[in-house]
Amino acid sequence: MDRTVVIGDIHGRDTWKDIVLKEEFSKLVFVGDYFDSRSDITPEKIMNNFLDIMEYKNKNKDSVITLIGNHDLHYLITEKYSGYNSVFSFQYNRLLLDNINNLQACYIQDNIIFSHAGLSKTWCKNNEIDMSNLEQSVNDLFKYKPYSFGFTGRNPYGDNITQGPMWIRPMSLLSDKLDNYIQIVGHTEDDTIKEKSGVWFIDNLEKGGYLVIEDKNFSINNLNNAKIK
Image (cartoon, rainbow, N blue to C red; front, side):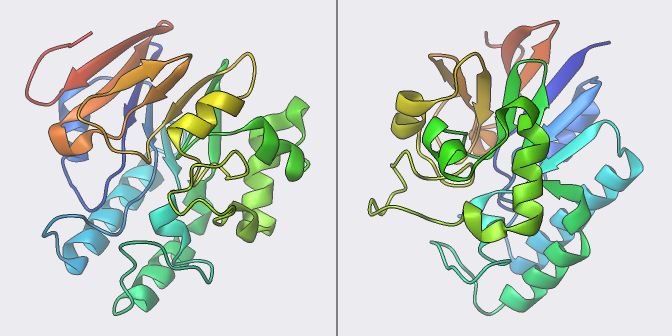
């Protein structure tokens, strides 16, 4: 079975467990943002949910990919983005460091790039990414130079082609995306999962949406409904 399920930004939500129970898959990809809930999910629940995801990852090392997002990154480097919880920052930092070997910035399957926000040509060039070994090059950079993934540019929303795979926004990504790849990203919430010019935007977990890739066919599924597309 070649079936990949991709889950958007978590932000403390445990509905990923319902997806796991509902779907069969050979790969499960989380696109990050485990912390900083936008609703009334408590820090304790956010931390327990993150630990549950890490436990699930540890039990399924080969089939579960756990990417990192900007709302996780700012507890590892000295930057503070919207939603930063200074009261629990130490606990969040310790949890992330304890599980850092499970977290990666990029995953590539065939010609599909999975990252939190997307990879631009400009960011790859500026950071001397080895395009012949793209996945490992990006992940090595995150491992050894995590500040390379921090916020850049003057646009306060992150809509700049210099932004990296934790931060770049849709318009900039679409204008400067890598050639010959499909990209699947979260980061920018929307009412529905959408595809545009070879980029899938899947930050829709709050409404129950997630993406399924089966034999190179893409479908939008929902916890409350059957296949949408």
